[in-house]
Amino acid sequence: MPQDFSHAGAGTDPGTEARGTAGATATAPGTPATPGTPHRVVVLVDDNSNPFELGCATEVFGLRRPELGRPLYDFRLCATEPTVRMRDGFFALTGVAGLEATEDADTVIVPNRPDTDTPRTPEVLAAIRRAGARGARLVGFCSGAFTLAEAGLLDGRRAACHWMWADSFRARFPRVRLEPDVLFVDDGDILTASGSASALDLGLHLVRRDHGAEIANAVSRRLVFAAHRDGGQRQFVERPMPQIADESLAPLLAWAQERIGDPLTVAGLAERAAVSTATLHRRFRAQLGTTPLAWLTGERVRYACRLIERGEDRLDTVARLSGLGTAANLRERLRRETGLSPSAYRRRFGQAAGERVTV
Image (cartoon, rainbow, N blue to C red; front, top):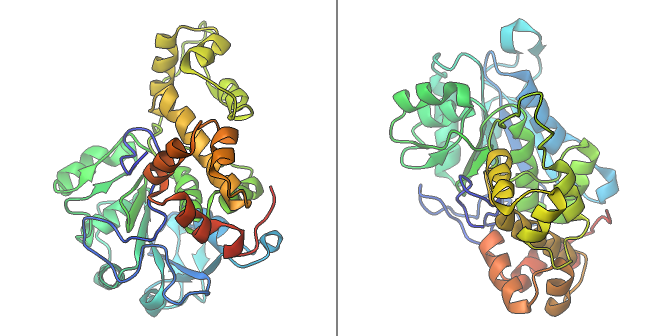
């Protein structure tokens, strides 16, 4: 579904048209400035940064993945000083590049840290503003939203941050449209993740935007992490009391994903879960922040994307195998989810666009 991750849907424009309320950019967010070169990702590390989010960025964007047959990203760390002390002095990074590394980055991941009341250094904020002004994609993990807001880049825009800091964030940055209950927000050229683990969700979402569903699925398998959690999924889940039977949707979701091309219905899902449709809707809202139909449609679109990437060019066949029914419905749903027509999606992410991995 389109860009509102406070509802269901993790779709976003993968990149043929630049978007975002901050204005047009020279190139689409996520598109390397020089065609054919790996996308340049730079993590800006500040004093007392959180090591977990840094590790997430390194794991998703920095590791070599020879099984994919080609490099996905050119990854670097940078800071105001060559040695940076991490959170609570746990350890220090040495030999880090200077802030000039942000000047030609396609994506800049901004610093996050637990002491959100401490202002970032003027040099860091200036580097982030310059990157945004020239059209780089900006990403904030967890308290990184504070950094982007402090730089003045989130005014009038949507953002996510950790639920624990939601009140503080609203008080300090009232012009930002904070969405406190979601995992992450994709606002085109600026993306923010709510908490530590959701940095992985947003990282995989970016891989999907840049390289398609097939590559993102391969990376998630290496991470042994869920291939996709909608940005609209809530940060925390209502948990039953001990005497109440397990209400987790995980078994039902896994069952449905294995049969995504079958004529599944909401009533059929409720019957499988042995609950009423009203109860099923309540559980989906509580655990995923979406409806059963929206989740089912999203899974079908993502499977259709993978079929297109693997070389299936018969739209009727893709629609049938993915459970979307007709080519017309496939076109509508794919454009709504990704911002691209099937032919445009094939040109960007299909086999002709580069070596693809079979997963």
